[in-house]
Length: 213
Image 1: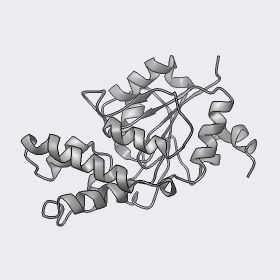
Image 2 (image 1 turned 90 degrees about the horizontal axis):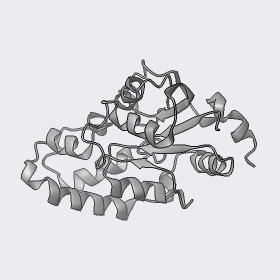
Image 3 (image 1 turned 90 degrees about the vertical axis):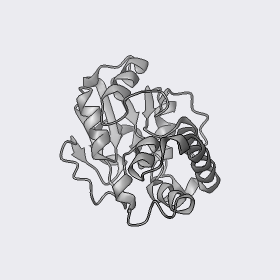
Image 4 (image 1 turned 180 degrees about the vertical axis):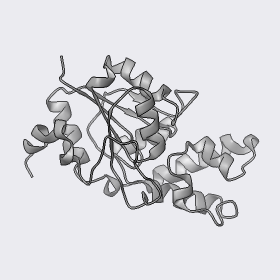
C-alpha cells in the first residue's frame, strides 16, 4: 500500500498554458476578449469562460471545437513546467498512485498530458466528466474514489484558488499552491503551503533526490 497518493491539476501545473489559452481566445474571439486579461479567466472551465465572454450557448459547441483544435496545434513540450516530467516519471517508477483533475475538456487534458511523452495510464477527471467542476469538490472526490485514497493520505498540486478550494472542500489538507507567471491575482490563502519548486514538497523530496539532474 502506498504511503501517499498524489493528484495534479493540469493547466498551470503540468503545462504553463494559461497564456496560450488566452492567445487562442483572442485570435478566435477578438471582439469578446477586448478589455479581458488572462487573469480574469484563470481556473474557469471552457464553458464558464465562454459564458463570461458573453458567447451565446447555441454557439458553444462549434466554438469549443475551434478552440480545442487551435490550442492543440500550438501546444509544445516547452510549455511543461520545470521538473514536472522528471517527477511524474519517478512516481511511475516508484509505483506511487496518482491522477489528474482538470476543468478543461478531455481533449485538451490529453493533449497537455501528451507533452510529457510518458504513455500515462493514470486516471483523469476532466471538465467533461463531472457536472460540477471546481470550486466544487466533486472532481477531487471522484479522483479520491478512483485512486482508493483517503484525503489524509493525499497530496494535491494546484495553481489556482478555485482548485485549492475544490481540493480542500473534498477534505484534502495537503494542497500545495504552485504559482506561475499569471498567478499574481491568486492569494493561495487556503493552501497548505505555497511552493516555488516541486522539491519543496516533503513527500516528493526522496523521490526528487533520486532523479539524476
